[in-house]
Length: 153
Image (cartoon, rainbow, N blue to C red):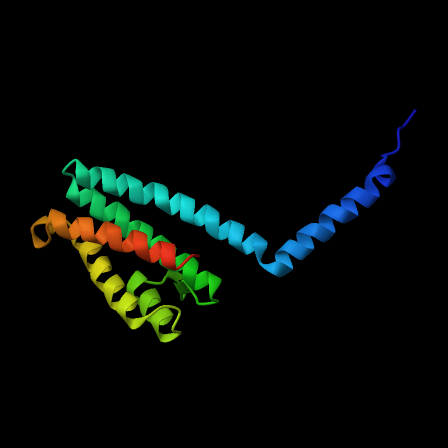
């Protein structure tokens, strides 16, 4: 004997759940939840960078913090309908920063700070370790952390 699904018994509940999800989506609550998840993930990476710099590992700390910034910039770009690829290739972080600045997604001061942070990250990633010091990495980490908190993605 084949049992028919008893979906009709739960149909009212299912419709209620779908309607609540639809309302949450319209109200922006789902987007806010996504932003919270992104912030939590980025917070973990910033904490890693902070721990590394506190134990004297300025170079990997700079790379992790800078990579976290780049990832966050991409999420902000996507959130605001800006491309993160050019001709099928990932758009450079500095170009994304310039595009976000042109759209006034954040201030010119933030844009200039991000340019400097990306430069420091590139120096660390390419082995130019003598071109920055541990105090600059500490400022990098705190600046990125502050930027991410003020500009959710």
